Length: 60
Length: 298
Image 1 (tube, rainbow over the protein chains, first blue to last red):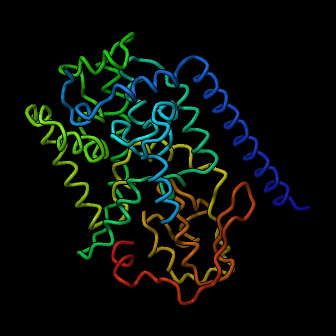
Image 2: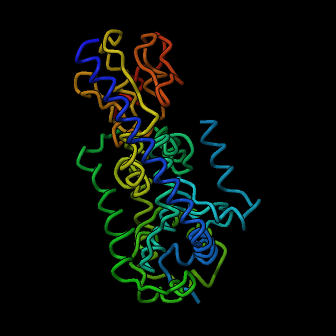
């Protein structure tokens, strides 16, 4: 196998490692967010955000 | 188009409304819409910035989507993307958005979604408190700019609620004006909102360069006919020599129009984690971008 072939294979492996690491990191952040109540805050915000707010108007 | 219609129905229906809004889906769909079923990541991000909290849930969700399928949700599932595709079919002079416009969405994300709410907000305020304080504190993307919110929630609100009509202010007129300008842009320039103004697209684009879903051109089979360049809705396709190996750019919404239109079998493919999931089939009589819909803009 030539030098370029080895470098290409190492490049692909490195890329896969970076993508795998980032996916694990983001899955960890998602799980931490859900466990710390972020999803509940998203729900409460979604339920209280009204069409007045979408026009930039103050609520009652 | 059928996938986009399925997305429209999935994210806008009366069913499972309460539970569904736990879920942030990577499409721009206002959660104040009377029929909206899921939460908007940009509205949620703004809400987190207002209480100066780090949104782990949203960063995780956007990161997973960006790294796995890039901006494919923009091309395949976003209801506002469907509206753009529909409006672009209206016969009118077509215009190409300048390349510099691509950067505006990053500025909107940094300033109106994160920066200003973070600076003006305060820790401890709940979503309800934030809304009660909107008289003074609301200078964010949702309240000042978002044309999706104006269309899906503001206009229905104005139509059914006389109280809202009585309280119309300069902000209302400003948001309605922005909506009209954005809709006009959609008619004359293809996917103009995705390219220039969508902060969610900007957020996903940050991770999409290394996504598992990538386009690949075989330089041996590509005849440089430029058909893929002409049909690209976000005008981000180039010939292989100009791409320099980076085919899935930050602006690519992975709609696969280029793959469908390619007249050479196997010259262009979409790969998910290295596996081919779509390949050009060499339809010589396919759309060539000269029918007035694609050619003038792309």
